[in-house]
Length: 180
Image 1: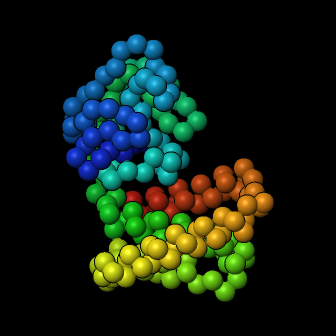
Image 2: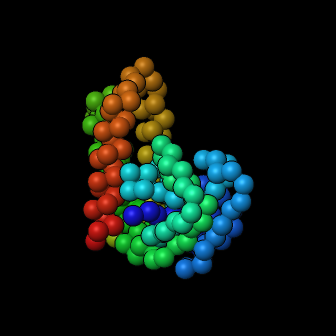
């Protein structure tokens, strides 16, 4: 299964060009080069790297190059909107990801409740239970906490293995949302 993220109106995101239309093939000429030329699609394992407002199932035809974080094709089209991916799902997924690494922040700055409060507020906002004023206050607190955490953790690199494990966790969590 291949996927394509686009803007809400089908416009290309993440450096792409043009607009995608359901069922309509797009093609490119010239040599395929990841990040430079070609129609870029995601595999399941790539999705968390390319999040955008709309997610589509896609299919490709002809020449294809598999890169580390994408598939580049000569010819591609979007065939079905993944309805499970919407603003609410995106917010809940972001809250899950933040909560998953929250112990790192809490270890660096014990007793600082700002991130936990912001995560709870984000979940409530996703469910329509928060005012814009509450959301803005939580965003400001989370931003300040992130700045404090960056300073506290500057010398503590997690390493590539931890990053790979986190990406796998995020992918599994995202796929659970998409499965409904």
